[in-house]
Length: 321
Image (tube, rainbow, N blue to C red; front, side, top):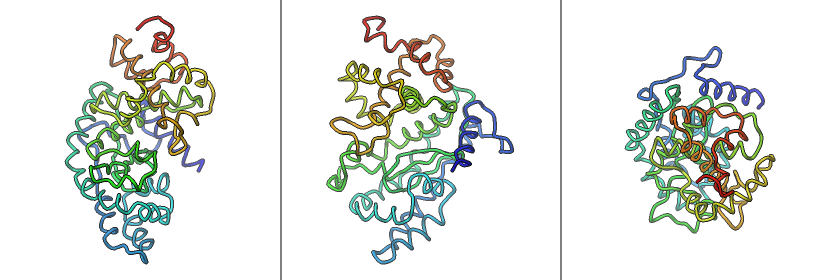
């Protein structure tokens, strides 16, 4: 695991600073040449049609996970786990997975919009790198992540329709699942993560700015973001959230703000994304050179200084905006 973590760190640093990892192929810098891989979606539905209660584990293992792309194998390692975990998720939400098919088979229609966001990123951040994008179906544990192999997008988190059987879902899934037309926004979010500098600061502030920055610049290039529910909730309570966050931001405990899943109580999970978004937004708005601002946001290493330069906290002290 330490070796894999080291390799991932090298890859992200290489992308962020426009340098390929030693011995690696030159990274792709042409948005028009970025691979958009959808073959795993077809594999999943072929396995789905063959699977029965008796053979599901074997079928999903042999016909989906084993035959899948490099991206699917990475997603299994990071987010799916064992084939038993995958089958358990499908069996526990049969109605949801059944109605997921129609939307998942329309992904190709979003390729022009996805590629347009890649082109836009190249315009505002010329050092951009464009890895392959893999669309996969998992166990509803992640909408997206990345490794040195590319961007890994969990299409199973984009199955919300008028007919979604919400009774099969817990509170967190009810809040975060999206419709298939929001798929380009998660691609944009993960693409921004791929450009970011290595995160060496373990503070809550650093983690929130990193996630919120991916939302903010992702919205700049794609026209939307993955957390509209957090914006709606946060905008109505921004001052009180900031006061609470400010007290905790220098510590390493993220449990009240990030990666909470079903553990959040009384309010939406992952409000650190919202705070980070607002800090990045303020930094961008208060910068005269917007291209430099994008680069500074992506490559920030001194997060307290970044917060100060953003002037975000000033509006809660009666200064500035």
